[in-house]
Image 1: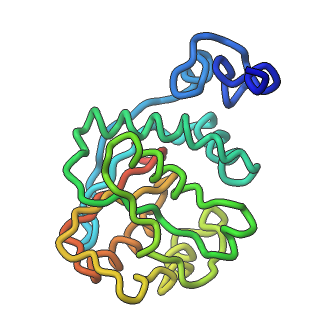
Image 2: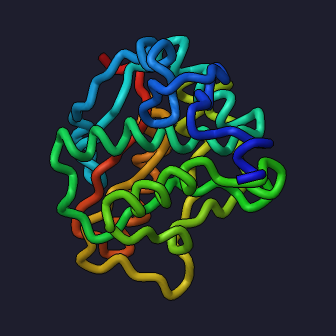
Length: 214
């Protein structure tokens, strides 16, 4: 009781900090109105990953939400973001998977940030769906620059050889839902999916929170 009085969270919007009873996914009605929902998939036509699903269009609100989540120590924002991603899972019936796998970040970057944002999303989606999450098999084996600061060509070069499967791990016959926060060029998801397929995965499908692909 004392904790709730000192740190009220039940009617507290995680983004604008408004105190309101009209919360959904930890966001108030005004903040939710800033979303441009998509909840649909698009084809990549890649050998490793054929389709990616996105929850919202990457507008200024989604951009600021993700920025606060990733770079301003607001790890709790995984809840409203995962809420929208779970809506996509429901609307698109994305339930026929053996594993949920988050896109990894390098261990040094995780130590600096304090968490891997995609892992927080994957764990919450696993809790909501009952699909197990594997956060250890796929690893970021080399340090790379932030993708959002690079050109399309630089992004491709930046990720070459940066992901790998942990020694002894096998994805044999597994249908995998690969989780990330943003889709831009698709290079990150393609690189991760390539390693998962090499490890024996039967199928890899992507799910992201936001994309600029209309």
